Length: 146
Image 1 (cartoon, rainbow, N blue to C red):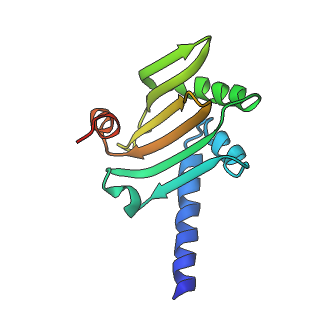
Image 2 (cartoon, rainbow, N blue to C red; image 1 turned 45 degrees about the horizontal axis):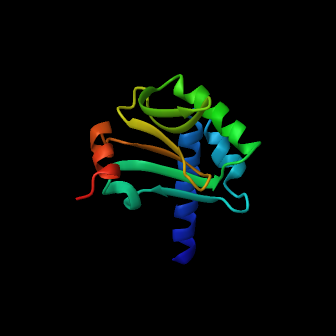
């Protein structure tokens, strides 16, 4: 029974990775390249873990924001934001300090978002989410306390 659960979990993870990679976003390389880096924290959620938020995929990585990683993140964000609608963006000294972008749905009727922020402690957080949650609802869940 335990093997079956492990097998199903592995299959779900392979499906998840294939679906995110299939979107051909440059930020995917950040998750792949730095997800297992010492000092980084990567979280991948799907299924029941995100259903209450009306999301189907949640992927985040938090890591120390320093060169050459910082250059790589900026390049990926700049490439992916060309495809997106900017909801909010803060640029300081030519670099994105925080950004909230909504990507096109690729005909799947799924809302897709990229969130990025560099904290005062020089920790960078990059988040990719998708689901049927609307932008306004996401802002309320993230920024407004109930």
